[in-house]
Length: 459
Image 1 (cartoon, rainbow, N blue to C red):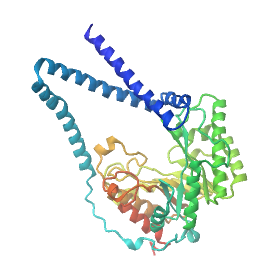
Image 2 (image 1 turned 120 degrees about the vertical axis):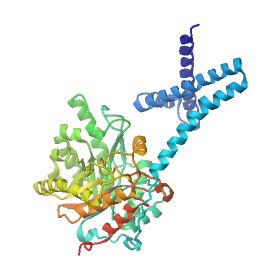
Image 3 (image 1 turned 180 degrees about the horizontal axis):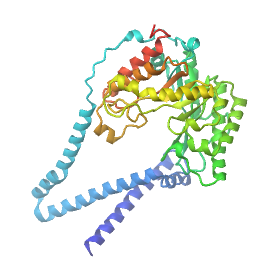
Image 4 (image 1 turned 90 degrees about the vertical axis):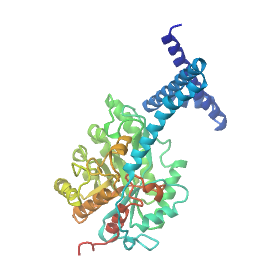
């Protein structure tokens, strides 16, 4: 038998082995979770329609196959050259390269995570009372934060939110759609009939209201692959079918907003292609929402190539923008450079606000904790970012300060929801965190300062 044929047979056996492990896992799951075999294996079959899962399985196959080849190679060495030569080969040809890669990668990541910036924390900015100071009732500025990680008991987390002068919280249920070509989203069976998942949000909203914190309910569409702003369907019927499922779930959450007396409801987030394809359906949806929900309304439009194209701003209370505007062109900018980066955007936003006679609310704005945070603020952390960028809580702090100093006193600017506050974040984790969360970082204290001072910062 040729060498190539042997390798092909071995690869086939490896594929079968991995497939058998997967099948066994779902077989066991059918027993342990008390579901039918058909349902369990139906879920397994569905996984293979997801691009990311297929890529993951093939990466696992490659890893296992390489390990099998290495075992066969070292077994042959042992057979013909003895144990001593084999162990040397394992040490120098296998273990040593892995250790070098691991230690080198770890060293690089840890080096990039070193942040020697010393910030003097001002506890005087913090709210020492048990409830929100409710500056919003006086100046109608949104002092907001997008918060994640809700669980059964949120008292401690909400106390931290109140302590940092956050007066508005975006509660974000995630809707699900497989990819940009999927013809419908996962919807609810009955509008206003709460699921176990819904009860988490109901309880969170109640707990926030008990501390005099206002709420924006802001459903987000999430995909396994692709971006919600680029949904691409092949016909008018497919678009209509998609919108029917979207309408159903949005009316469900509008009902939740009304029942919980939620103060602001966001009817959608970054759905650019639907906005362009279906303007009349959106206007009809707003009318249906108003039949259910009596509070304020907004829509969260992307900062780039979306908010300018929306035809229904006049039907809403606020122009909502996901405000990840690029502000600088190089790493480690000074505060003055970041502020200068806002000037051109401010002029455009002011004109847009005056044209539509509506104030602008930043439904999202945030910055990573790295030296390149103000170049492309919309980018999430990736392995590439962690390897090439240096962690910098100072740049995140500067970005916050620049935003507040540039915009907070503008009459057209009604406030913002910062991205994001993860209740699961820890002080230890924040010491190496590159992510958007300001929690336990200087940006948190800057936020507390600006959110806590009612019309007094420039007096």
